[in-house]
Length: 79
Image (cartoon, rainbow, N blue to C red; front, side, top):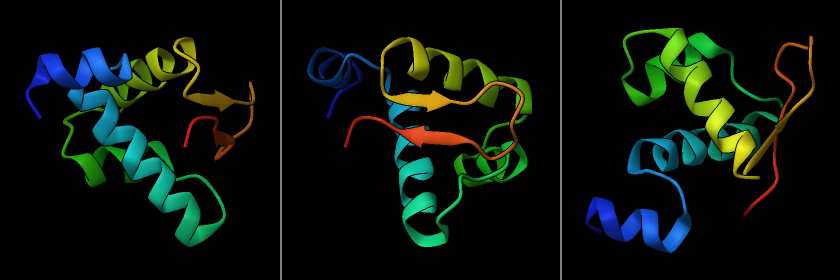
């Protein structure tokens, strides 16, 4: 799918969707959410700051939920 089509279909960017799918698959396989370092490596980002920004956007759009102050507390809302 083209970038614009992904955004129009899902309401998130291609990079956000890639991270979301990584998190969803990781939780399915490990029963806990990945660390920021694992997410960074898993989707080929250069910094954990980039991971954090994408997670915040996914939370804002209702795709993920994260418990404040807790490590590995990301929950998938959309399937």
